[in-house]
Image (cartoon, rainbow, N blue to C red; front, side):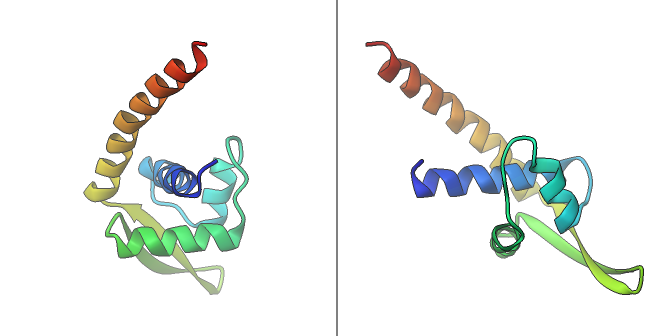
Length: 101
């Protein structure tokens, strides 16, 4: 898969995992595991990028004696999910065209 396309898909999967409720790293990995394999290092790179793009907000809280970061999707993140859905329709139309033979 093209690296840029894969990056976009991973970003949207992470945003979708957080859309219903605020979440933290381990839970995000667990939530996306049915559809893709995601390492911790990859996840935290994605989370940092999404935070820098103002698609996520981060809140740190104490949990069992240690700090846990919770991620919250912003309106910009929700917009990115919706834009991706529209883009995916176009990708599927291209796929259908290519697959016609």
